[in-house]
Image (cartoon, rainbow, N blue to C red):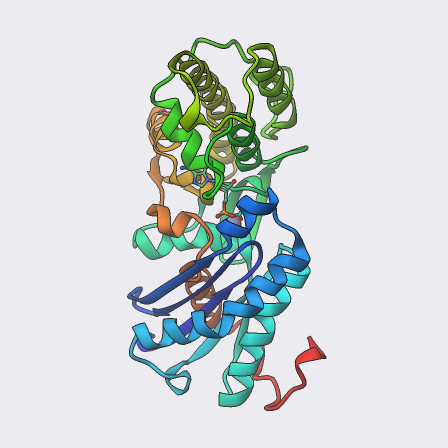
Length: 353
Ligand code: KG4
Ligand code: ZN
């Protein structure tokens, strides 16, 4: 059906996002309100504070999404909302809002898994992306390699045994004294362009483990030690660093990025070999999640995928980082297959959720 219109709400971590998507794939609106300022001031996500920030903006974000699409709540076919994984206090803000709208207008609700949404949004931008396909999902909290056999049918090929790659980017940025008013990933990507990626010898994680799992805690420690041994002081922001100090920081950024991504390359190559044995008809590797907006990550993985005669599908950066479009689209996919919850009662008390 091409005439369905779904609102998607995402509040699992530090961004409050809403979007409206039509079943033919048109994105009618997309709104994100970021807590980057708060994060910079407190150096991380504190759940109670993040909950408060979501509560402050959720009504406005949803209203803007509707207005930008020239729609009212009455025009919606269903409401999709992220129900996990994420910070439960934060998720609740989105779920309460979704149930309130659905209850007032007798609309079905579709509960969406955040990581499934990161993967499936690729089907919105690449119309010939059919199941089965593979996906590498890389963000601040997750590092997942999956084989998507069908809608709702996923096999996990690998996950992180400690930290996710985005976490390693964020800590490296913090220790290098980069501007934390935005997330660390883009700051490292930019600084790495000035550096020599072979200057610092970091070892690739989990070389001896011939599986598809990931580990970034050890690389983080290697980076911290390299920073200490070069007497880099994170209290001195990079903008005030001497040119010698700056180039030493750039070398660390570039060397870190090379090894962090090499780890992804090695795991993806093995995962593709495994997956093709189960599903020889696989044609695509989807790479999504915040870290997938990195150009170096994309270029390196593109080479791996080409070597295996597959095609890389990478959503545009605004659909790689947390957003409402991926939730609305995943909601639509499930809704069209008849997978949804009935409308909640009108005037349901908010603390019901
Ligand atoms: O998917 P996402 O927006 O939120 C989570 O679900 O975690 O991912 C956020 C992560 C952060 O760690 C951020 O530093 C990283 O994605 N990130 C990047 C880039 N843009 C965002 N990492 C590397 N390079 C980038 N350009
Ligand atoms: Zn995410």
